[in-house]
Image 1: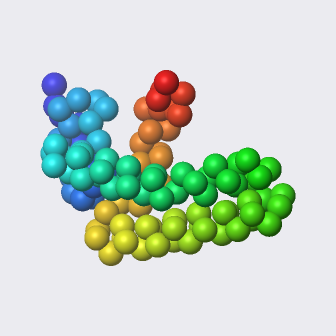
Image 2 (image 1 turned 60 degrees about the vertical axis):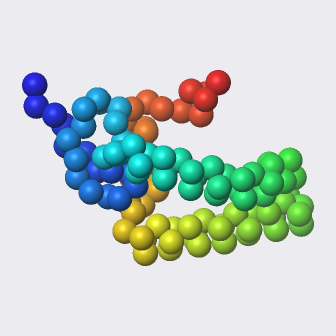
Amino acid sequence: MQAQQALCQECGGEFARRRADQLFCSNPHRQSFHKRMANRGQLLTPFVMGWRLGKRGSNDSSAWAMRQMAALADKWNAEDKAAGRPPMSQLLETRMTMCWSASDLD
C-alpha cells in the first residue's frame, strides 16, 4: 500500500501520510499549529460571542465586534502568508473532505 501524499497544514511542505487523517508532517508542526490556533482563539472568542449575542450585526456593538474579527483575520492571513503557511481555506477544504464538523468537538 502506497502512502498518500499531502501538504502539511503548518509548513505547506509535501509529506507521505501514515494515516488517512494526518494533517501535519511532524509532531512539532502539529503542536505549533495548535498552539497558534489556541492563542488566536483566545483573542477572537470575545468578539465572536459579542457579535453572536448582538444578533449578528444588528446593533453598534455587534457591528464593531465583526469589524474587529475581520481585522484580526486579515492580520493572521498576512502573517500566515509571510511565514509560508498554507491558507486557512486549504485546511477547511481538507476538513470538509474528511466530513469534520464543529459537532465533532463534543
